[in-house]
Every structure is written in structure tokens, then in C-alpha cells.
Length: 540
Image (cartoon, rainbow, N blue to C red; front, top):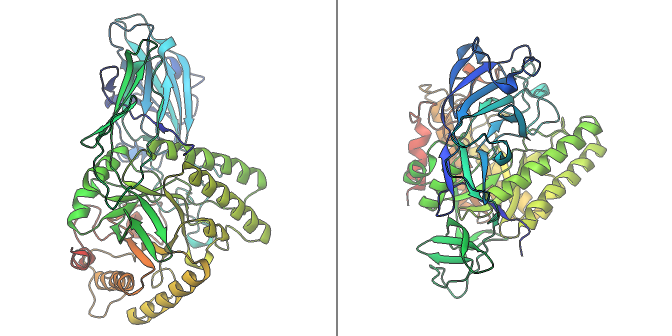
């Protein structure tokens, strides 16, 4: 049996009520970091506050805060519903706050959380004011980059010296309340977690019609109920369900016992990808390089897409001081555990990716650092494996595949030949080089291979008669090499193109105009040549 119980995403039922707190909040950027001393936790001063949208990062709402990482303070009034009883409790649920958050309710510290991209809850039942009185919610949010964080700060080193902000990852460290906030009323004693396990009996998978005391499956929806001593329901929760099995063979991925190819233009961040992705022939995505929102997973469930759910463990380095490595590993473990709990009841999630691109000469410069990395990765793989119902992998730089991959179900390879190295090599030669590399890795690890990232930066409107760097022709031709290899090599079961659309990064010479231009669409979602090529290649 799986050891992981899924957290219950807020929803309404006969026993539960959720109120959205999204909208305009009061906001103050705490440039001097003296908000605590100034008593901001009991309410923000009238002077200096400005309205700001929640959910949304502050960096692109207020131009003067474009590169400001924190701390900052948020405030709004919260009304609890009338008629609360001692048999109910009230929680605040935050979909994602980046990076760390302190929660104050009516002037009292109610809770805190470290790490973005994942939800957390704070129980405020004991802090509520009398029925009918307004409650004051204040948040302190800090997105400043530290080497102990996941993902860490500190910069990219030799690859991109002097990048700003000093992130150790290739996306902008947006800060703030980035996903919805909800006020949740639920039974004081009731359902706390959910675990769903399915198995395929017979030749096909289909809808379940059998009923039990705690779970009924009907038309893709499961209803869990908690009963009191007399058999009366005291809590109920509805969860959409899908039935499927997933497993890895030596040569690929099996969905309900049948081979399946995994194709995607990876969204980063995901913005209503599934419907459009399906129209382009894509059938999957990996949540690189952090967990995407639950709304995106709703759409993936609805459209039948396969998702590799990835933790925010990107940019990890084992060349740091031992105390830093130890503290960061503890946070990486907590973040992965939170991801497993959030997504373990999602039908669309078929695999866990425990981190992105560990290794390389800068992050493991010594044999001891290499040993520490392997041990840390094995710890994360074991944690994901204990969930018990999905495959496990992590994204590798092919030249630095860690030995921990042998404990995984398939190899995920982020391959950038022709862009970061062997620049300008003819596309036919790149194809032969990739084929030889993939054959050797498959022979070594005896695992099926998914190309988890591939691509080249492409300036929209840049055209060349002969495919050259930055041109749309080179990007389209390079990606076509990968689609052909997927068809040719039986053990390469998927290609995830990096990226769906151009996205913002820290400033560095490597990134023209502060963007990673590997998208097959522009940041405004206008197609490049590669988008049309992929649609033809992946057309059902």
C-alpha cells in the first residue's frame, strides 16, 4: 500500500464551504525590512500602501518593483460566515506564495511556510473575532534568494557570470502571492486525506460501479464520507477519478498495458496548455521546473494528458559548504513530500520527477561532492517511490547522468547539442551524434529514454537561407531531428520540446532581452516555424 495520503483540495460539499479571497489587496514593499518593528503584522499603515492583484507576482504589476525580491506585506479584510459551530473549523489555504510567507490573523502569528509553487494551510479557528465582525489578514512575503533555498540563489557561475537577480536557475524568480487564496470552513473532525489506488483487471479499464462505505465511483467522480458513531455523515468530499495503469518496460512507457509516446511543448509556466497542446498533437507535459497550478492539472485530467509532476528542486549544487547542502536537502525533501501529497490523487500524473539537472563539473567538482549528490538523489527517489503508484525519474544533463538513475524507471534527458555545445554543427551530424549517445546510455542504464528537454533559442522573425543559430529555420530543423529519432529508436518513448513559449529569465548575456527564446511560440503566443513543424509531425 502507498504511504502517501493526498491532501484535500478545497471544494464545496454538503459539509464544506470555500470562499475565494482573490482580488485587490493592500500592499507595501518593505525596502528597509523594518515591517516587524513598525507593527505591520497588526495592520499596514495608510501611507505608502498601494492596491495589488492577488494572485499575481508583484514584479510585473509595479514597474518600480521589477527586480525587487522582498520582503513585502499584504493585507485584506476577511469575513467569516455567520453561524459557525464548535463542530467546524476555519482554515486559510494558499495555492502558492513565493518564496517564504508569514501569516498574521487579527495581529497574531497564525503560521508560516517556506517554498513556492505548492499549497499550504493555516488554521485560524481560534483567532476568529466574534460572529459578524471583520477579521484582518496580513502576510509577510520574502522572495530573496539564498543558497539554502529550493531552488537556491547564488548565480549560475561560469555559464552566466554576473546574472541578475542571482538565481541558480533559468527562469525569473517572480515573488508574491502567485495562486489563489481561500477561506475554508470544514468539520472539526472529518476527512483529512485521500488515497486512491487502481489496478487493471482483465483486458480493459473502464468505469467502476461498485460502492463501499467510504468511496463511491460513478461517472468518474468519487465521493468520500466520514460517519459518526451512529452512521450519520459528518463530512463529505468529492474527487474526480480516472482509471489507468502505467508502467515502464525496457523499451518504453505502457499505459493500460499498451505502448504510448509522450510528446509535448513544455509550458513554462503552464498557461492553459492542455487544450491547445492537444490540438497541436501533444499528449503530455512535465511540470518543469516546479509544480504547476492545480488548475492546469484539472485541464490535464479533463483532456486526458499525461503529466510528469516535478518538484521545485532545480539548481542544486553539492559544491557548497556541508551545512548549506544539508539544510537545502532537508527543504528539498519537504518540498517533494508536499508535491506527493498534493498530486497523488491526480489521474493525469503518471510519474514523479524529483529534481532537474543535478550534476555537472561545477556542482560536483570532487569525488566527495559526487558521492553526496548520489546519496541525496537516492533519498529523493526513495521518497517518491514510497508513494507506490507512479513511475520515478529526474531530469539529467546527458553527459552527467548520476548513478541514482539506476533506481529510477526511465531516463529523462535534457539535451542541447547544437546550442550550448557543438554550436553550428550540421543538423544531419547532430542526428547521428544523438543516436549514438542515446544508444550508449540505453545500453548502460537499461532504461527507456524520454527526451525531457531539447531546443535552441530562436528570435522571432530571424530567418536564414541556411539554418543558423537564432533562426527559426535552425530551431525547426533541430526539433525535427528529435521527432525522427523518436520514431527510429524504439527505446526513446517521448520528446518534450523546451519550450512552449518564450519566457522571462534573470538578465544575462546568454538571454537576449531577458528572455529564454526556446519557445516554439513567442511570449505573446505567436507561432514560430517550429510550431507548424511539430503540428505536422505529431498530427494523429
